[in-house]
Amino acid sequence: MKLKKFAMAGLLIAGSMTGAQAAQWPDKPVTIVVPYSAGGGTDSVARLLAEKLTQRWDQTVVVTNKDGASGTIGAAYVARAKPDGYTIMLSATAEVVISQHMMDKMPYDPETDLKPVTLAVKLPFLLVSNPSKPYKTTEELVAYAAKNPETVTYASSGSGTPQHLAAALLEQLSGTKMMHIPYKGVAPSISALLADQIDIGFVGLPIGLTHVKAGKLHPIAISSKTASPTVPDVPPVSKTKGLEAFDLTQWFGIFVPGGTPDDIVQKIQQDIAAVLQLPDLRATLEGQGAEPSGMPTAEFVKFVQAEREKFGRIVKAANL
Image (cartoon, rainbow, N blue to C red; front, side, top):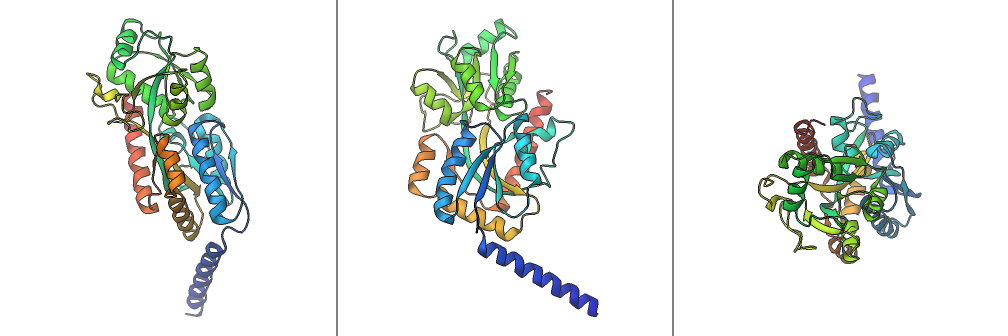
């Protein structure tokens, strides 16, 4: 009985310590790890969040880029970090729901070593080409690829990334065969498109739109099922005959090391949800075609699981 009482007392003390940690958190700088190179869509959103969170927390929030291996290098770094809330990750999709379906062995378990916190934003991809290419619509692209198998090259920010799977899904549904050229991050893949070294690519709407407005890239289609209010004149891929099932949306989420206390997770979620509702930040994100979220943690956990199942089906169907 005495041992049982001591054990219960220990649990109560531990619980109160966790609550105290959350009440004081953060009392030192916080690092947001972006598992991709600087200049990409994930990096851009992370820096916008860092600015607002610095003001809200009255602590410096820095963004660190740890790119490579389709986001798994940065994700592994976060998974091994001290679970105290001071190292968090703004993920894309590959490192948390896709790579586990494509890699025989990962340096971390995305389902146990990383704890979902909240959905930051959702945004469609823009299918773009260099303006010099002979195809301007999805129908023309598919027809060209059908007549010239394995000739059309497409860029991605790495094997197994959503950009890669979007193009793989296009190949699968259209019955065409193109050539995948993976790059180490979004920025170099965009550079290859701009330099006309690569023919097409699915790129995040914010960064793609910048180059479309400058006349350096041509918008062929949007990856979401419905048109985006940011680019209402760009039709969805699914509007093309035979591609009605095409629907793939990119998203960025907040994750922390698996052992991070729930009280701290809750505070991070609530504060990120709050800054995402700030009028200026919301206007900036929506102006780039992103949909701000701040989804509650329990809901985000279910969302992540559903995405794992969806992308697993895509990987299997595409025989990747």
